[in-house]
Image (cartoon, rainbow, N blue to C red; front, side, top):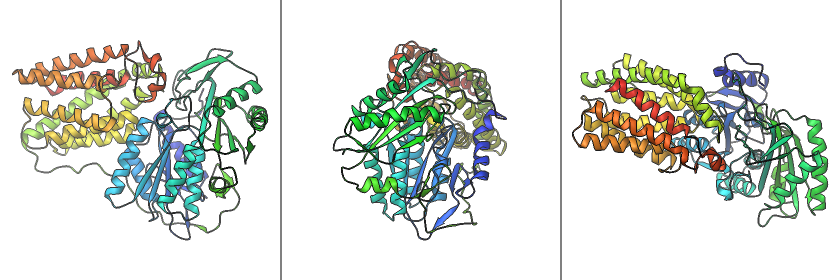
Length: 571
């Protein structure tokens, strides 16, 4: 269990404050995360990494000379918002472009990609290399998630930045490192987030989950707990079966503790790992044993192998190059000095309040703000249930994320309405706040949905029934574009599409808005419950698709809750 915290909602922010205070030699806090507190003698490409908090030393502990220039940090196990990623990347940029790298999770992809688009719009050359090292999460390497192999890709890319490579060169070696990296993890028990009454998942006594994720996702298999030698054999055998094409016989092993397995235990396991790699004809190069990518207090471990070239070559030189960060150091890095001037960077902002909104739109904006107040109350009440649904095949944080997003949207909508904003501006303010505070996949999707609604409705006139139906269709298109999901994938889209379709049909048949909206909300509720029979095909639940059968999708359920509650106040 987690014992030391104040308000659980403030945990990630307070952790960042303490980290920055303790690690001022290497980093400083900025909106959304941390960046280096040092400057190189000349401009370099900047490496920005990140993801949810709860994985220290990934990601903030890897910021410093020779490694990352910045880390965007979300709430516990939730991706950082678009605004946070953009703020960190803007602060880390040193004039030669930015490479973003992070684990392949839906929320991270959505938010980092959106931040990348903002940087490019501002004239900053920005690229992305997504880490996909976890062999258990998908048969297709491109669909795999990133776990402790993040370190291999980050270290190689950071060393290439330090060596003066241009952005093309840094991107190339980062992709090569990812192609040559494989990981496999196990857990003996789940992790418990601050304030939670139970772990995200449990493993029966004497049993071990195989192929788990680092966000509390359960394993894809289960077996009896082996001896240390037996665990080494399971991990090595699983990774050797995934040997990359063209890889040589030189390999870097990284045995990673996931949170509460003691170093002494890891060394016992590593002795067997080292022996087995030698028996397989491999030459071990510069191994690492310790905690590099944790899952809060999870009892577990993972093994990562980075395959190098036959002769000491480019990847090996970059892996062994000097670096100096709070949690990962080797050699001496020259040509860096401390900096006292911190550039003033803020997250890409919420839309400014629109003056001159029509009286009808201002009145509608007030009703929208009242609807957000009710929605936030419902999400508060349902957060635990949504979290339980999410724990079946995901990481259990959907309820918390929706709760945070709903509260932030309520505050932003109320403020905008109090300043006389029209309906469109109230919705866009709520969208920005929801995405910023919630983070994760749901934060990005709800931000896209609400922003599209606001843009379609605008701030002039009183939206009629047809205009509302058209705005919902615009929101449907925005969600499809942002997340790429279709009906049948077991996501929020399975409830959104029936809602939009029925609303269109009822409005087209001449129905008034309250009746049409209520019928559409009923359709969304039925569709959400019907997702119980589906197998998850997208998101974190994808790796546990069969396990999700029998449980409705939490994103679809929460969507149905929101639209039903909103309709009671909007119509």
